[in-house]
Amino acid sequence: MSRQITQLVDQIDAAMTTLADLMAEPDHVDFHSVRADFIRLEKTMNAKAYVDASFAWLAERSDAGRLVGSSRPIDFLITALGLSWQEAADRVGRGEGLFTTPTVAPMPAPEPEAGESADEALQRERRLREEEQRRREQDEKAQREARDQARKVAAEKQKIIRQELRTLNEHSSPSRAVLQAEALKEAEHRCPEDLRVWLRRRVTNANAAGRQPDGRKDRLAGHKKRALRLGKQDTDGNVSISGSLPADVAAMLTAALAPGLRPGANTEVPDDKDRRSRAQRGVDQLGVVLSRLLSDESPKSRQGVGSVVVSMTTKDVEEMTADSRFLSNTGHLLSALDILTLGAAAYDLGVLHDVQGQPLALGRTKRTATLYQRLALFAYEGLCACGTCDGAMIHAHVHHIKAWARGGVTDLEYLTLECPPHHADNNDNQDGAGGMGHMVRDPETGRAGWQPPGGGPIQFNDTELQEYSAGAKIRARSKPPDADMPLSRPDHDPEPDSTGLFDLPPTG
Image 1 (spheres, rainbow, N blue to C red):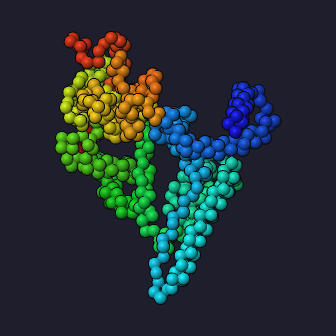
Image 2: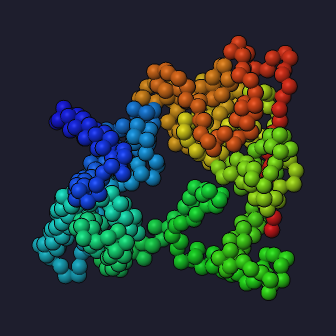
């Protein structure tokens, strides 16, 4: 089978290359003579979504993440196929829905009833198990039907189905497998927008009809699905919010926002001159609520927890414009206006760097990095130091490049930032076991990066977002370091540069 797949991929590759060459000059192609072929091609390519889900499922079952030094198969899809996290997660999710055997919640053993004979109790138990088996067979049949239908449905529609099924309760009636099969069948003759409306209604009805195995309605079904998600920054620097709030949290949020919804609230502008929309006033009030929360305790007593920190160089301050953007420990890029709105007026902490952008060492004998060491690492690295990761510093762990248990010390020279997933995958033994790499520090540049198992070039975080860190800016302004320059400070240091770290006290 592997040889046959190789031959088919070769044929598809050759055909698509030839087709792309033929369409390189579309003004030379007669639309009416090829339109039927391209309609047929679009339908043919629907099978690609099915193949993608199947391969993602296979990668997950094969622990493919180990091939890229990760314990998570999704990282293989991201690294090897060049997918976004969202696309990789969607493929894995669709693969699970189509190929993983559906699970049916076991029905609890019945309680004995008054006056019931042993034989009657046994028969009642048998009926429950028969019902449980019926549901299992129904779900497995529905899944087989879904596989056949998925071959004919475009990836866009399959994504819509997966998105809508996320709101399905655990004990819905019909089940997830049945609804998935029905939705894939409906997708053949419904446009994407209509499919979404149709499935949303079906999910609503299924949630309402759902019962737990004991026959009772699950009163916590909605609470189990609570979620809050912050999206990535758009071109304006704004961030979208999505999620699902339980009624009690929604009530509290509504009450907290209400005082700021009237014209003139949270502004010096007279009520009749307030041109903000109600939605804009709501955002301003949310900022006030969050500011009051974060200002309940001083930054000193919080030790940085709940603080917004911004990294910038002295040159950034001197050349700051309205279009300047600075990296924060939350992973967001803040403008000068954002910083002023947050209330920063002066440096709370300064970090001195050498010309390579490396923070000057602060020796410590404790295993846990201090707040100031974390801030120094933020100024230098900005983000998780692994590859193309965009993990924000506020969630990152301070990692000992040489494990503490193996004699590593808590000095800046031997520390780096890693997001929780990458930290969990670090091989402290540094022997490549299990296909796992580890963090090292490059002796030439002083930068920390990920060393693949078995050796090879160190992979540094050179993402665009990382370039906003003060350390990266200093490195960019400096000459390439001398290969013989030791990592520790020489007797005669080159002229250092400095960064300011704003620990932004919220206004409120």
